[in-house]
Image 1 (spheres, rainbow, N blue to C red):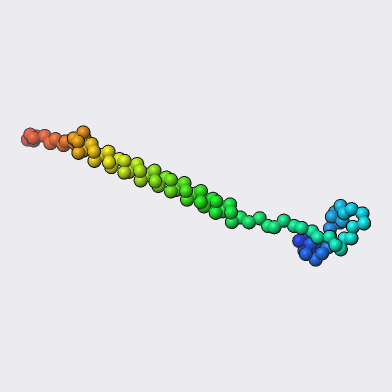
Image 2: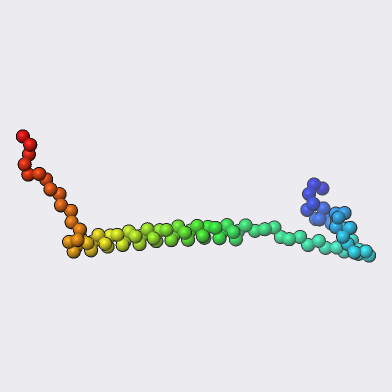
Amino acid sequence: MRYPEDQFNAGHLPADLVAQLPPGTDARRIVIVRPTPRSYAGPILLTITITGGIALIILMIAITLHVAAAATVAVLSATGGVGLTLKRSSHRSK
């Protein structure tokens, strides 16, 4: 037997556990309860959810800023507050 799990599965008790038993205990009637292996599904799903939520928030902020900037430019250009004039010199050098 290479691993402690093999000992437990075969019904063998390690010496350190036998030493911890109270006197008069029948070792054949001992049930060893082992914790279940840890599941990583919960932390992985939580990480994916948090990452997706942050990406969604950043996307919504970018869309909001884009719409606000477009509305600001539209209002300012419609009211005449923003204007761009290109002047070309009327005389040419000869």
